[in-house]
Amino acid sequence: MKALLEILQPGEPDWDLAQAIDPDRLPAHIAIIMDGNGRWANRRSMPRVAGHRAGIGPVRATVETCARLGIEALTLYAFSIENWKRPRQEVDTLWRLLRHYLGKEMSSLMRNGIRLTAIGRLDSLPPDVRRDLDRAVRQTEANSGLRVNLAINYGGRAELVDALNAVLEEARLEGRLSTLQIDEEAVEAHLYTAGQPHPDLLIRTSGEMRISNFLLWQIAYSELYVTDVFWPDFSRSDLLRAICEYQKRDRRFGGLSPRGHGRSSRQPVAEEIGVPAR
Ligand code: IPE
Ligand code: IPE
Ligand code: MG
Image (tube, rainbow, N blue to C red):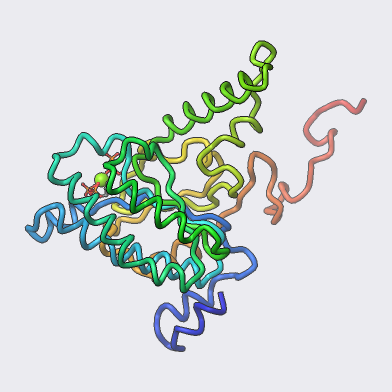
């Protein structure tokens, strides 16, 4: 958080937003569905791929801001399994842009201690993309700052299928397949994001009110924040606003409010809800 305030000037809009954020209640993990590149370009009578190109700046800015805030993990949805349905030329451009980003960003990722991981069905990526991605992941492996998960050829259902198959395979190798009972811990331990906190805040740009097969397991109790801003226009202010809004939410996880709103601030005694005392 301090690292963010260092680069802001009193009086600028982001200064006030940053001041409004409680550094002790930051989301540990932010996940973002970066949507609206195509519509951003359409509005400007440009080809869709121009929108994808314009989407790189916000990726850079978001990664930097999360690192400066001291966020633990950031997951960016860059390419879904379903995105293969798009025209070949668009898909090829997305791979080119990804490789360009990885090449250009490496020194800044290293400088900022950022650890990159890729999540998704990486075996089906074009070999050159896979190679560059593996290299970037290896190079940043020992960094201990912000963890950036790039979701590439990612699908939430595929992740669950892969996790379940991994649980089965492990049990088979250990000779305990016949008595195997799958529980939540076992699934959890084999997710692509195993060991990381679940997203506290899920942001979607471009106004679409859907999940589009993203992190289905991990977002069970994430706070959702949808903004109409198209991804290429998503600025540091938009991110800070999302975090401010997140901090106003009352997260109950199915229980009662820890902050205490009226009656929910304490457990009602049995007589008050008409349950006879035992
Ligand atoms: C998000 O923008 C980027 C990817 C899915 C790769 P879109 O390309 O989906 O843009 P819209 O939703 O068509 O505007
Ligand atoms: C979700 O956006 C995938 C990414 C942002 C990478 P889409 O544009 O593919 O999702 P739908 O088709 O609107 O649900
Ligand atoms: Mg879209």
